[in-house]
Image 1: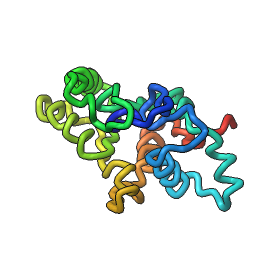
Image 2 (image 1 turned 90 degrees about the vertical axis):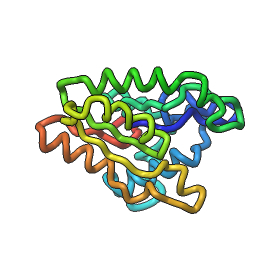
Image 3 (image 1 turned 90 degrees about the horizontal axis):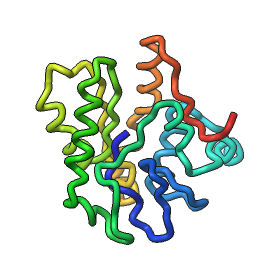
Image 4 (image 1 turned 30 degrees about the horizontal axis):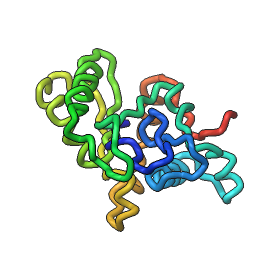
Length: 179
């Protein structure tokens, strides 16, 4: 899953995984992501069930199941989104994406937002013959906080699990609880 840059808020919201946060307060993007996970695959019936399914803002459980949570930029100045966009991170991330794209094992690339899609585009264009991978695109989760929601309803979580099911692979448990 490719996002934009770490949370730009002061106080250490970001924890090294895209969209993940070590703080108790849920960042807006993650709140929208978790609502989509719940709507799409978990389907809790009330607030208590929701809190039981998503008791944390840390996405380690997804990472431990093989979900790479990566941003197009790995650092940011506090309070200034995209402030380190021109520091060379894009070339590094493009290199990482090239390595993943070169894999003979099919992969799913989930591109959230224009910036993620723009970083992935040259990778695909360089090697279109490698197009045995799956690409899901949508607006960035934060687009909903600006009144232009192009993320909710993308169904990426059920689509990913359907792909795994169809190919005899273990599905991702999208809940963040320990059980």
